[in-house]
Length: 324
Image (cartoon, rainbow, N blue to C red; front, top):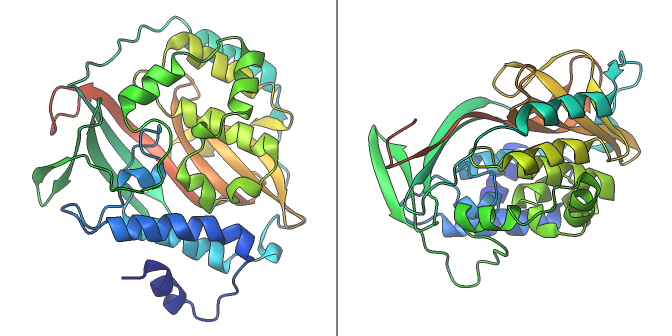
């Protein structure tokens, strides 16, 4: 099935943006759809989000298609409504320093190779649903729930899948523990290393966005690792966010993709001459990572997003089916 053609058929009159914006995203989605003919058909292959990357969300192919649908119908005039109320901001350096102080003494244990990382997440693109999955830390298997039963699938990547970089949580962990914990050095490293992108980034301006927007997304992607993120690195990531020119912390709380009142960190940039924004959501008390929102089409006190992902539960467990 050609999921992209199905999307076009739903909105045959929808204007299509330029080739440069969608070419890479289309290739990724088609590759994912073609590879989804295995035993877990109906769930996009995990490398759709960048296998081994932090967002191990097992997002169904339909969601990826809905993201592309959003790109197909959004035109330059849809973005950055004029005359809307402006959201107040607070001192980003002070807030990020408090966030760093809150996490740098946390105790984190590296999961065993044979343990599983359980993720339960909420996706709004634009409709809301929840999804869960288990991934072995060493990347050898993944599992999901189907009709009340746990289905375990051996992890094999087809030849020529195009995935680069880490292909398991374990490889990702081994890479990030080598990152510098000096915020300026960390930002410089992240700025120069595209392995911290996810394939989902291709659906939101691809690699053509401004460099500072990519810095913001890459730092957010690493923060989404969550369960085993070394505390010194976690603190450095918050401090590095404060060094990205244009990053803001909103004075008011904003609901994340799961409807939780959250601390909102955002980066506003221009797309086709209009303002849009990417958001990072944190727990307002503990500063724990909560989720992300992309391509906000309203930037005032009540932002609207093309789509959002919210982390509900993440835990290292001993076998599929366990959730804590």
